[in-house]
Length: 296
Length: 199
Image (cartoon, rainbow over all chains, first blue to last red; front, side):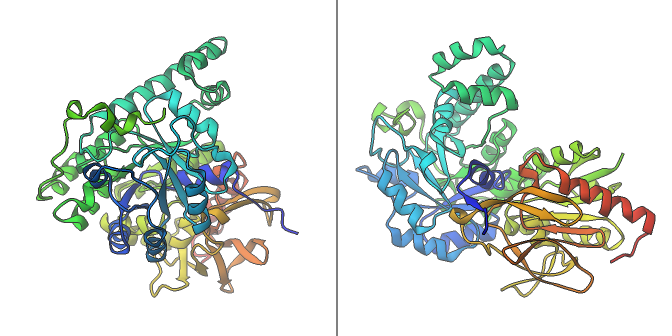
C-alpha cells in the first residue's frame, strides 16, 4: 500500500515556494485567465469583481459565483486561486470541493466573522492571508496559512500601504532573528504573536512561508519596488484588466518582477502602457473604506 | 569546486542553491545568457513551466541552454524543470528544451489538493527518500538510453540519461540532499572521466 500523505505543511507551503519570483493576476472570466497565462502569470485569482470595482459597487462582497471559478479552472493549466470571506468556513470548503489550488482568506471581501479567522490547518487546500505586520503574519501562520501577502490597500492603485506593511514586517522579522531567546516570549506578548511561530522564524532566520506583495500595485515600477524591498513575488489586482492594453501591461509586470533591478529594461517596458489606474489618496478613505483594517 | 547554475527566472531557486552548497559545490543563480558561461552543471528548478518558457523565450535563453547541454553541460530538472527537459509532452506539439528521450504528462497526479509526500526508494541513491509532489508531472515512457531510477505506484518519477537527470518531485524542499549529491557525483563528475557524448 502507498504511504502517501496529502495536505502536509511541506506540500502546502511548497506550492507557494514554486510561485516565487512570479506574478499572480486577478481575473473575472476565462478570457482574462488565458491572457494572464499567456503573459507569464504563475497563477490567477478567480473573482467576481476586481477590488476597485468592489470598492465602487459597495455592499457585501462575497465568494465568486462557482460558475466563474469553474470556468477559470477549465481555461488554464497554471494554478487557480480564489477568495473566501474571512472566517467563512463554508465558502472555503466549497472552494476546496471545486478543486481550487489555493484559497485567499481575504479582507477584500466583506468579512463573515469579525473576530475569528479560519483554522486553516484543518484544510487540505493551502491558504494565503494578508498581513500588515509580524503580529498578524504570525497569527495567520499559527492558524495554518501556507503563504502570506501584504494587505496594502486593495483597489486604490496606491502602493504606499503595501510598502509600509512590507517594511514593517521585514524590520520586525530582522529584530526577532537577532533577539536573544530569553526575550522572545515578551516579544510574542507585545506583538500578539504565537511564541512557537516566532521561535521558528528565529531558528530559520526568515519567515517559514513565502510573502508576496499585494494591494495597490499599479505599474511595473511598483512591482519591481516590492521585489526590491524583499517580496517573494506580487499579486496584481485591479491594475491589469483596468488598463488600456491588458496583454502588454501583464507582460510588463511579469518582466519587471523577474528583472526588478534591470533599470534599462524597466524603462523600455514602462513605455506606452497607457493611462494607469487613477488611484486613490489613502487619507481620503473613510475608516470604514479601509479594507486593511478588517479583522486583524 | 564545481560551479552549478540554477535557472533563476522563477520558482524554487533559493532551495536549490542551498542544496548545491550543502553538497559541496558552488551555487550560482542564472538569469542571462552571459551567466551560463563557466558552469559545470545547470539545475532547472520547480516553478510554473509555462511561465519559465515564456521568460526563456523573452530573454532568448532556450537555444543557448540547449546548445550548452548538447555540448556537454549536465542538466538536472525538477518538476517544471523535468517538463522543460522532456522530448515529448502529452497534449503539446512541441517540447521545450527536448534534451531527454522521455515523454512527460503535466499535472498528472491532479490539482493541489491531491499533492502529496511519500517515501521513495531511489536506485543509486538509497531508501527512505522524502519526496514532495506538488501538482507534479510524471514520466509516461522512456527511450532505450534512459535509466529509470524511481517509480511511485507504477509511474516513473526519476530518470537519468547520461548527464541529464529529470525528477517529478521536489528534492529541494527537504533537508535530504542525496539526489543533488547524486547529480553532482554521477552526472557532473562522471562527465569528466568518460568524456562528453554519453548521450
